[in-house]
Length: 426
Image (cartoon, rainbow, N blue to C red; front, side):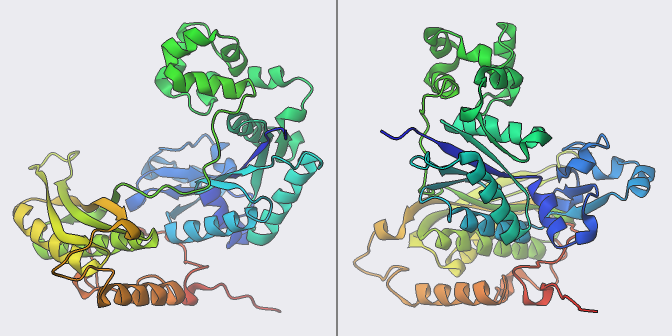
């Protein structure tokens, strides 16, 4: 029987690295990526971390002198770019194994079971080189007999220069030494409260956790914690999930760049968020029959507060955006109250089922049986080929003064014809 082997490929400083790919002058420069409305730093390069700045720091609190001296660059979140670059990374990784689990936007597990005839460290280096060649992005590769050990190996590869970005913990002569290096807070699956509990009981690192009796683990950390520790011991308990599980709910919501008071602006924003949510629904070949609309003021401001939500059910499950926009607008008009400064509105789609399981109706055609699906498929194809929002809904507005603040947004280099980088030969 083949020995279980897993690799975790993790993109280094993913958001910042995406920005650097298309801005070569940012190489070795401190780069930070800002949250919605350019509020706080949500991602940053190693160079920025070395200046004492961390995730969660408010952008306006960063010393202007520090920004000038070190050439710090702060960018608005460009999720279109990051999503497309992630897809390119995952497509490249699929060349190296038939079994791939996309774990997050910048991480994937690869099954290397049956590849033991290869030098896996060399194979990891080949993966690293190919991803860099295809996308320009740096990655770390951790290899182990379980997903949890692969996580630890990836962290080790990233933290130690001598590993050159690739580390196979199974090939190390003293695996226990590596486990002692990992503090309990940094073990995949150990949350803050469990880490505090473990430290109170004198357990400070991964190796010490592997020595704890099973009955104590199950009592203190449930069966989930016991499986985690077995993974640390080299016993695979968490399989790769190759099939992306469909979402039970889909939410589309953003805080406004500035407060909104007028109903018309809220209706436009709701229509815009509806179109995003329903497009996501269709991309997973699903339909929904319930929509919830919510809105709220800024609870951090010393001003009159109001928040509310309501829901509506469609006659039949649908993936037709206008069905949801009409329902959402009816809901919003019911819960809207004049005289308040609104900071946020959003929509949630629920009661989601796969198209193949959508119920039929004897008296009226479903979304899948009439022209509505044809229209949506055509619209999605055009926007996919020509750029997102090339065709949009008039109800979502044109000027969109309510949009979130993104003053430092870089171009959508890979998804917009207008933003394709131009190379000039001199």
